[in-house]
Amino acid sequence: MTRNSRVSKTRILFTSLIIFLFTIIVVRADAFSNSVEDQKIKVNPNFIGSEDDTIGINPDNINITTDDEGDTPIIHYIVQEWDTIEKISKEFWVPEKKLKELNKLWNSVQPWQKLIVSDNEEWILYVVKKERSLKLFSEFYRLNIDDLMTLNYISDDSEMLYPWQELFINVTEQRAYDIWLLEKAQPVLPKDEVIKPKVTKKTTNNTNKNTTTVTTNNNWWTTSNAGSTTIRNNWKSRILKQWYYNPKISNWFAVGYCTWYAAIKSPNIFKYTSATKQERPFGWNAVNWYANAKAAGFSVGQSPRPWAIVVYKNLRSSAGHVGIVLSVNSAAGEMTIEDMNYAGRFIVTQRIDNINNSNIVWYIYQ
Image (cartoon, rainbow, N blue to C red):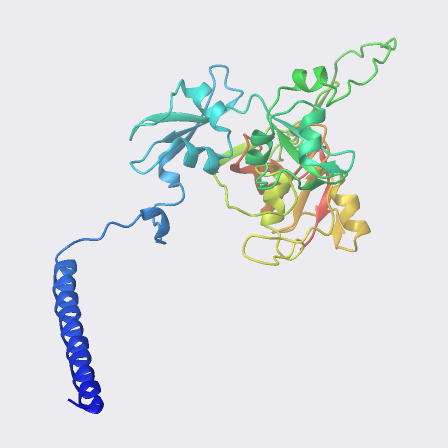
């Protein structure tokens, strides 16, 4: 046998071997594919993106009551099948620890369970005085950093806090004084006061039978004529309706308060930069809004108009209050106001107020 014939025979054998192995691989692969088609592959659901149509809270499952004394608003929520403590905590901006304490929970909730999600008792609105990070702020005053982040919609503990920024802190007012977060005002020595007697003047006109009565004291005055409207400086609003409202919108005001809601409802002043972000051309406490808006060049005035922002100097607290004017009834001396935190945090109230309420500073127009 020659050398060439031996080489040729070797090539034939090698080629045949390659063909045989290729055939085996193809047959095995086909059989494997058939078996895979008949089996369900398990995939970790954490790696699969999906749209959850159960996100959010249905307002039909929320109701608002007051405590036994009728002073403190309490928000109740009916638990749904897909709810968890974590989800409810985030939706209502209440720390999980507080939610568990209010309802004596362990680690889970049951469908149709009625929960207290806010009793509005242990919260203060704090105005930042010094620039520092949230982490340093919490450490300095010995506050729970997780609660601060949850309540103020902050995702990074290194986020900077700036002077005049409003921060929502879940401590009692007394606790805030104890840790020197708030400083008590120096006592003012009382002055000698002479209590003025109640003066009543009654004038009767026999010709037209109109009677005018003027009553004066330190708290209120009333003028009543036949066919006229009674006006009181300490007017107590007539509440028309209330509801819970909590969109995820950031405008640098403390969430759930009157300033936050008034900014949301005033897009011509606090312009939206995205669906969830707003500009803040002026700020500070509600009582300062009129002066700050005027200084920033916005239109202001003394007369109520629909969609104007009404500024109160002392309604719910010394920090003032703001709301939106919905309509004005000049003949009756009344206007319809819509505001948040008149009855409680995140609670929107529509109410009738007196145009001549002495607590009104003036109006900001948009």
